Amino acid sequence: MRALSNINARSIAEAVAAARQANDAGQAFAFSGGGTDLLQQIKDGTAAVDVIINLRPVTDASQITSNQTETVIGGLITLTDLAADATLAQRMRVLTEAAASVATPQIRNVATLAGNVTQRPWCWYYRNGFQCFKAGGDQCYSVNGENQQHAIFGGGPSFIVHPSDTAPALVALRAAFDVAGPSGNRTLSAEEFFVLPSQNPARENSMLNTELLVGVRLPTPAENTVSTYFKVMDREAWTHAEVSVAVVLEMSAATITSASIVLGGVAPIPWRSLEVERFLSGKTLDAATAQQAGAMAIANAQPLAKNRHKLPMTSAAVERALLRLVPA
Image (cartoon, rainbow, N blue to C red; front, top):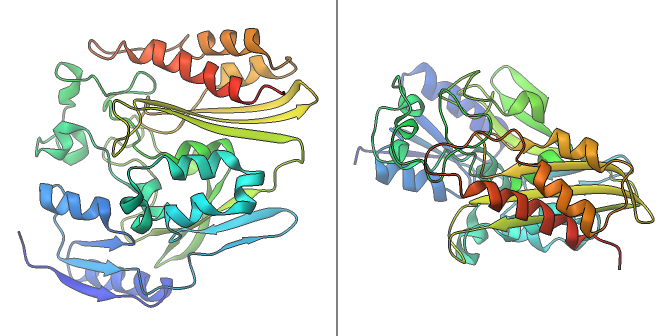
C-alpha cells in the first residue's frame, strides 16, 4: 500500500482548498466522510490516493433544516441519523427507509449521505483490477462475462449498476444536489447530476475532480403525499440491491394524482420508470393497478445473458412497493 497523508478539514472551504492544492501538486486525493467505501477501494487497489481529505471535523454539513418550500440535508449526515429523523419519516418516508436499508448498523453509524450517493460501482471486474471502462480501459468485461448483477436498463458501453440506496429515493423526491468546488458552488438537478455511461463511461456523476457533494435540497411534498422504498437483496444484510424501487405518490383519496417511480440496482444511474409514472396518474391505487404497473416496469428492459432473473424481481418489487401504499 502506498504512503498516505491526511488533512483534517474543518470546513467545506478548507476541504475544497486542500483538494485544489493537492491537484495542483499532481497528487491524487480523495474526500473522506465516513470512509467505508474509500477504505475498501484503497485495499482493493482501485483508488490510488496520496492525500486523504478528512471531512469528519466539519460540523456544519450534517444538519437537516426545513422551511415552507424545502428541506436541506447536509451531505455529511450519517445514514443512522438520517434514518432516525422523525420529521423526515413522516413527510419523506422513502428516504428514511432507504437509509435504513443500507448495509449494517455499524456501517450506517459512520457512512454519510454524500458518500452513499457518490460511491463507486461494486462491479467485480472494476473492483478486482480489470482495465475496464470504469478503470480507464476500453471495454466492459461484463458484456460477455459474469453479468448476473449488471444493468438491464441504460447500459452501454458500461453495464454497471448504481450502488446507492439513497439515490433512487432522492430522485423520486425530486432532489437537487449542492456541489462545492474551487470555482464556487452550484446546484444540479438529478438529471444533471447522474451520468449514463453513454455520456461518460468512467464516471457516474457530473462533478469535477475537485468538487464534492455537500448537501441535497428536497422540495416540500404536498400534504397528501405517501412514499416507500422496497429492496430485494440476495442475503439479509451487508449487501447492495439486486433490485429496489423508490415510490412517491400524491393522492386524492384512493386516486393517484402524481407518481414518481425510480428503480435501483438495475441501471447505471437511478432509473426513472416514466411509462409507469404516466400509467399510474389518475388510477385508483389497488391490487390490480399495482400488478399492471409491475408488468409495465420491465417493458423496455434489455437483460444480458445471465441477469434475466432481474425481470420478475423488478416487476414484483414495483408491485409490492405500491401495495404497501394502498389506502386501508
